Image 1 (cartoon, rainbow, N blue to C red):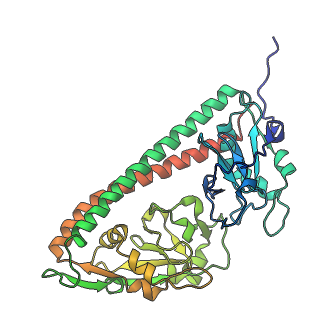
Image 2 (image 1 turned 60 degrees about the vertical axis):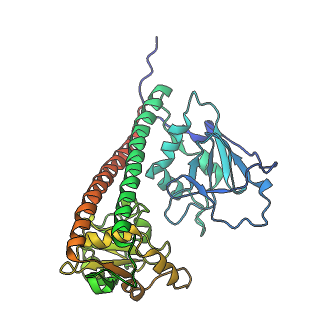
Image 3 (image 1 turned 120 degrees about the vertical axis):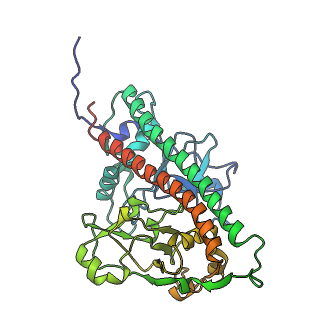
Length: 395
């Protein structure tokens, strides 16, 4: 028997996939989907009123869709695999395809390959160079990937999905813990509290009155992946109130300490988005410092002689800002909030004994959330390592 030696040989993607072009002729599907930066399908933000949805393409389970005409400002090709049983529809401009033989190449394995930063860099290199960063379909088909035997593919996919399941479970736990924090906030500051007739010892204040600094940054003249200082943008703050390390930019120490010295982030600062997607927030912990930010993110620094930062953070989690901010949005090219508006967010302050009881309860909840968030950061790092190893698989 001839022994086949392991090699680093790669294979042409187009030899394993074929285009699919099935249209939504019967209009059974009426909600178009797009693809987000994390390479998942999401409801489309396009205005489709009056649009003929019968021309939209159907995507069935284990099929792929990508927008070849817009690699994106983050240099990531919008690519996703559909995993549900019910079909979805995407724009007629999308390229839809499927694997020809799933006994040779698993859909889940191919999607993992598409998630690799190296794939995006390669795709970006092959773009047409126009404003939209278009990628020719033939260029995509000619891209190379390693295709180990099917059992090895199953092992790799299983490892990745195990990590994904743990991340998802942690996210569900974080949601439950955050709901607990919200309930504690409402019980203390909202339920049975009449702001016009506050109990004795209680008083109304503004956010600015209990803060030492409310500021924002600016866009640096230069940033690069190899610089040592993390740079927080609006998209760097995730909806679940933590920093998404994958979405951080980076700047050099001199820019951080001179050009952007006004917006140096310190531990326990509350970061709050004031442009674009408004109202996302997180509390800065020392693990991602040194850090700075731009004009889309406000830095809210609590005066610790007046109140503990965790109390204000808990109020944000409880939604103290939501109605006020909705009423005070400034409209320009995009919706935004100015710093003066932020400083005037009204808050209710109880006597110290009540605040201390609240702080003790909510702090234990936030500590549990923090541990889950840190665990997910490690799990995501393990996923990245697994994706990186795919490029070194011996066939």
